[in-house]
Image 1 (cartoon, rainbow, N blue to C red):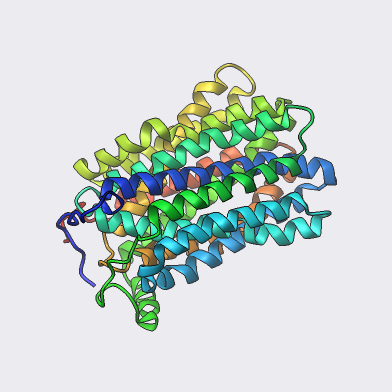
Image 2: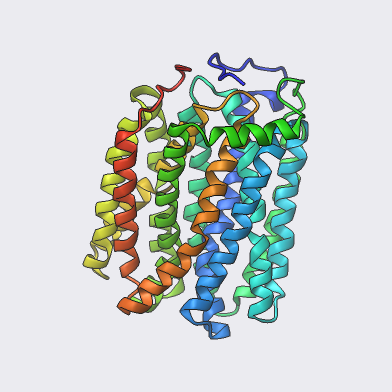
Length: 412
């Protein structure tokens, strides 16, 4: 499985055009993130309605991450082996969103909510695997930029998700249950679009890049012997734990500590999650041109400093640029880590690499919501999670600074 360096050839027909495929995957990625980033705000309403403690709320976050990590670990090699079914897998992801969100809307108590939460993140996690693999194969010459353009779609979802959820909740006649039913309806519509535009994705597979599932799991284990790949996974792990703390608890900080309305909290939260609309394509392009490390190392340092600043500025107007600054580096830098891992993957092993990246991070990070909740309980402040996330991000910057990363497209 040697890394391919030339650009992927263009196939005939608009649905096989690599730009059309990238656009379609980006739209689907955006809707998936719109659901995901609306969820933490909805959980504040679930916690209030069901009288959940901080520990019980952390349990929901941990269960959600369990489902996500299991999907990524097991799904990577399986996705690579089933390349000719990528279109069907992506369509099933959208239908999975519809089923899980409809079930959330009808859940009667905490235990049922926790059970369904185990499956809520599965469709979104599975979507990343064939999507990232298809983009990597079609854009080996501009991988960082292409992954970041897919991230541009996700960042549109990151902006609209919290704002839409906050707006719907602030109407006064829609409960959190109704919002989940609305999500389910949108997912069904999106499933039809994905089926139309991407159902043929991966059917160009041949014997080199499909089948032999056992060999792919062995290849995944072999990747763990590569010290650079393991260092990237460790960096992504620490950064991911910090990001999850921010994403999970920021809505509670905004609503409980700063006493914002659901709509106000949604707008501020959207700044933190969605400003990658501006930064992701630029940082991705720069990482292709100057190298991944030249973008990631200083980016993580700035992100850490901004995280430290959140609790200090409180509810002043300074919170707006600080949250926006955090948003510039949230998902955008994580997408460059993905591109860095894909630089080491051979053709046909891209989903395996991304699955390892997300899966290992998710498994180890399952305890992170409980650690964050313990920090909140000990300090008596939701603002403490920003210092926790900032410290982890600084460590990430140090790791990236010492890794001898491969130059994009060099194959060396």
